[in-house]
Length: 100
Image (cartoon, rainbow, N blue to C red):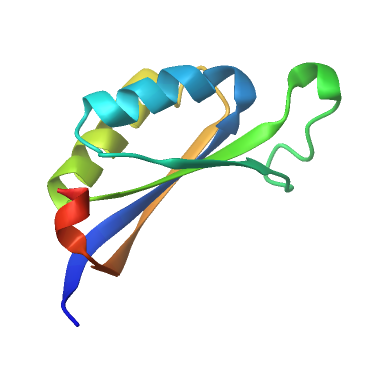
């Protein structure tokens, strides 16, 4: 079995940004993503109401270059005005050619 080093970029954000972020992820070089509903508590507490919308978690497996490009884009375009957190982990994937 051959393992390919990649990055898993995880973005947790408010649901109103989902479509924009999914488009950004693909445009910046990812081949796909997984989106799930997310709950939690952070420095700003818990979201006050359903009216604000649910939180979502978007994950993508990308090359280190694409991960850097994506994280820089998030920092420049979203962090100041939206509830967005993003982080990356080193991962090893089977069938790595599928993600390049």
